[in-house]
Image (cartoon, rainbow, N blue to C red; front, side, top):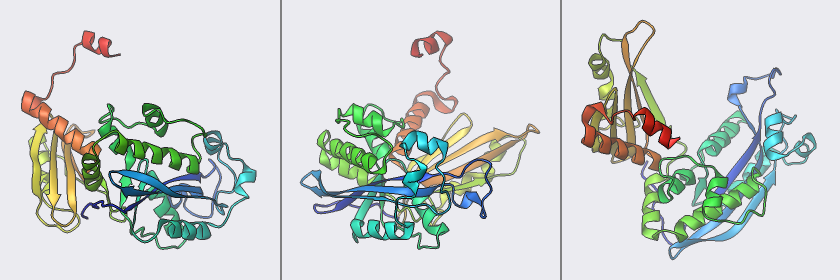
Length: 330
């Protein structure tokens, strides 16, 4: 997976979903893990990139009538203010999704706040027997905001980012349509408050293919020492999990305490963040768990900050803060 490059005329579809959840204690004629949420609303705003910024070129909104979770979950009601009556007023999911794809067009880049919406969309498509391949790159605007604000490395809400940029709050949050509008305005402000070349570079390196598995893991056998445990899984982070090709090291592997970090690149599938952690099991023996995932801006920040810590303090890492320092930070 190579990241998507952006040029004048390219289209972003900033979208958001709302979904209902299964009622606790209720039995369903299927395994609820296969449908942890049933989509009840899709909202989206189309933006076109031109001359260093983005411009609104249309909106989409549709309510969906659920067929599995037809009673509103109390948490969903509290957050979205929807009622059981609202769930009876909508179109079938298949019809709604067809209209949404027509709105997206053939060569758009999908964008949203967090990656849970793409996961939920693919889950619903698969559950209802539809093609779950989105065939579009996806950009998570949440870590993009984190990167270009004073909140680097932190996961913030849409409302936090709206307040950060002093965007007027004319609508309630937690409606798919209003949240798509707010997210789009945040995205627009990122362009307006930063150099377009830097924003485009971040978009290019952060956009992913949601149809590819994002994270891969391996757990090694238990051993007598942390070093033995690490040796059993260290090869996991040397090759691309998609094509098995050997990685190029962008930030070579380094160890802080009982964790090993690295940033790797595959010519065909882009950059990966890697981390290996050593833990103890109940018997007091050591084992290592390794994770590889397509790198995001949050991962770039994490591995860069850990590398800086390593270069300053070595494998022991930064010393733990003294009690009086912790009190000052509270």
